[in-house]
Length: 625
Ligand code: SF4
Ligand code: MSK
Image (cartoon, rainbow, N blue to C red; front, side, top):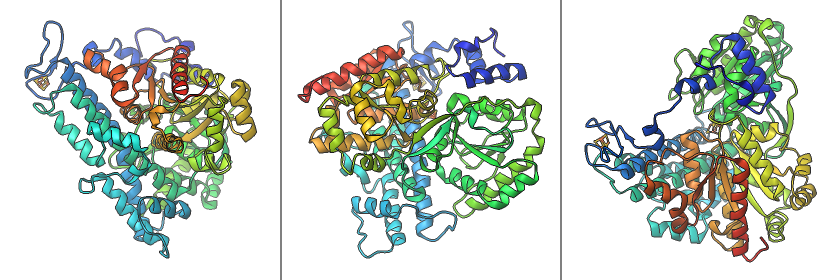
């Protein structure tokens, strides 16, 4: 444990989290908050981005006394290279997830699996037509073969154009072309960033930063966008439905299974398996009342959006979910999974199961999921969970009570449907100032913040100002727990938003999915801009990631900015050691690209900054501020 006793009241805004933090303390469980204390204070060189480990003439650390590394690289070059590699890690994560989705589509199309199928045939045909594949008179599986092949091309270097480039407003495409940042292929931009940042390559900080933007654009408009669209084709396009959030969704008398990670390829199969009568009968034989499946983080978002499966918690709740003592098994794929879950699980009876060869955890059991064995493996994992029910020590079980209701499932298709088939009602509401703007609040938790304080307060402040909020990723759970994802939350919104959301019967905070689903927000912005004949940077829209932590969140922020969306961060990336890079990110990009980052930890001040930006965009469009 850390040197100083943690003040639990200060760690999270949630009762379920605080209850479990007290239990963790009693049970002698170490959490991320304890380890943050052990790691503090953080290394200032690392924090400001001026530590370079790119070659073995170093590592080098830049200071007043030593302003250049052994090779002669200065702080600007080192910071830009570190940032470039940082966001490239995130872009690689999303786009590799996207590639896994295409492989699934390819396997379905070629009859290589009976475990997966096409759930949304209409979307398959619509997307195929959009990217130039003829569908007339063809079998859907035949079309799917071509679509998978087309999407694979987004990863290579021969096509040099993304499938969804046609979605990008004309003015934005011209701007990218002029700056030389039109994304070509995912793998190409990622490999080029690694090449550029090798010792002795790109030693111009601004040039490296532009390639960072290009790499992230490939993520937003290809890697993530393909992941989202193919997931909809394979598992169904989300539509509005009810669900519940917080640790109260765990059941004392049932076998509890948690799914954690990002890709629905694993979690959807687990969902099917837990609903099979033989599995339920098996659980009953063991004395359980049934099998309860709940989600964590983004795979939780995916299951919730499409199936209404309850969400146990976001990033900082993942260890605490196990501390309930009621979780038999946690099954993961990849991204945002704390390695500590194995240790926390071993203090109870919780088994951790990994499924992807690219994301194994020492101490966890590996059950490899492949296209041709998904269902068989899912049944195996569910049986493992049922077998562990006997091992549960009911005396150590403590489940916080009172799950909160939410409404989820707002894909762009669902939004259009709610609007009566076109964006016109939303555009009219924006013009009339009833919806003054739209802000996507996305991303993570970070133990450096009071858990979800900024996520929730920023959301509340913006809806008060008649700004429609869209949430994805771990902010979803925060907004849901705060009671903001239900139509009744219009009581907390400004009068204009109250009127519009009230008439449509939708919440003032709309849940649009997981991390990769931020591509849905990009698409919505593009649709609005195209409808109005302007660039995305002209719209009264913004993005925010108040409590972000991951490379992926930084990549999302970077593609948002490069797409023309003003983006707020609660804290800066590790770039403050370079004035040049910091100024570029916080203001220079605005001149170059029509948007920039803004950093503000206080959610109330951040809401005002975003509001000012929205006012200026409205005024420029000739609308009342
Ligand atoms: Fe040092 Fe240059 Fe090597 Fe970086 S690339 S570790 S600054 S010598
Ligand atoms: S899971 S990237 S903690 S949102 Fe997508 Fe949550 Fe952030 Fe991971």
